[in-house]
Amino acid sequence: MQYSVSDFLTDIVQNSIEAEASVITVDYIEEFPMLNIMVGDNGKGMDEETLAKAKDPFFTDGEKHKNRKVGLGIPFLIQAVEAAGGEFDIKSDVEMGTAIEFSFNLENVDCPTEGDIASAFRSLLLFNGDYEILINRIKNGKSYRVTKSELKEALGDLESADSLNLAKAYFESHENELSGKGE
Image 1 (spheres, helix red, strand yellow):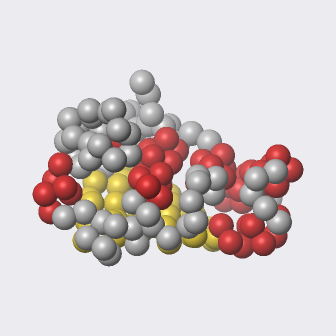
Image 2 (image 1 turned 120 degrees about the vertical axis):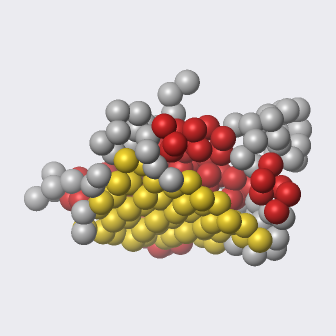
């Protein structure tokens, strides 16, 4: 299965939400030829032993998915990062949260596609749970910033088809502007 950067980002944010984070920060920084992503949260965090096991594809805590015997998200991310000449780092403290940083060399032939960033950002707002998410997006010196609460206030909700379409259009317009398509 070929994963996109959007898939990896969505998986990491979902892990943060499932770790009971109330605040999640996503920094998505593209300064060609590098794509640097950081996801930080204030969730339950991991001790050193669990943190080491999180990189093992044959480990899962058994809480998220009761019948699953493997946890492939982080190991697949590490494999993709290494194949594309990037870097991966994870830090975590119990009761303080977790920070994952990873990068891809966009010129590397093994770099995964970015996928649909606008849809990925919209999907980060839709997971069940009471959490705030802050997305910082930078591309070649241009940027935008948005929080879940700001979008919810502007749109009224994040459940109706109309509000979800508006949220996607919002992200698409910003992405087009960053790419020079909105000028």
